[in-house]
Image (cartoon, rainbow, N blue to C red; front, side, top):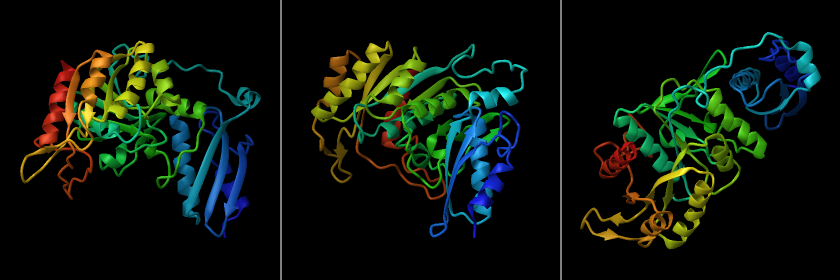
Length: 348
């Protein structure tokens, strides 16, 4: 049976990725809990730097090793080592600042997809806009910045995880879109229980530790509302453009206006509104049913003085068992054509 001493030895023999000393030597294993009845292991580890590609790589290695010796589930927490420990073991040689999305000479267009509330289909819009831009020949990256409610990997049918090359994370590519998401770095769809500062670190990691290569557009699927992550994005990206997603219901449009007001206060440029779930069209009769009401998108666009870029109907994508992506519309699907038209408006 796996015990705390076994876990301490296995994890302690691994090197801290920045100081290159065994975690045991740095006294970096802060807490171990083993629940034999559930075969669950929980470990708290201190590193010289958290929220980095190196942390992700170490995290994957710890989970792999502990599962090999009998753990069914592994919970990991990270904190930073004391400064005196870092100073004692740190290599004094300075490294040249690496080029990232935020300090490169040629920055992509950052396009945040926001909403005032959850459940309006913001992530579906983000995914299909990214895929449509790629279909237009653009080089596109997609950041699933909804760190609590990540859903992009599942929506795009992504079943693999990013690879690590040196100190960089290589995003997963599907449908011509490079994707990074918190969903890649948690085990078995576990909930993320973090406070604001940790969220900011992970978001910063998506910008600075991921090898995006040459991209023209970065789509950010923001969490709903105006919370910590949305504020961090507004702080990190002073030149970001935004699209606001709402449904036709007047209340949804009223709430979405808050996200628009936040964008305007932080000098982000709102380029338009997308009205999702605009109507349901009967296959038999072709008649449109406005199940969530009418006029919300137009009202929001008028209030924010921006165009209504498109109206997306209630219609499920065609599923392909051999190329499964439950939320991606094919290019020739009626809804796929609407998204392609919206993408052309964005490029223009």
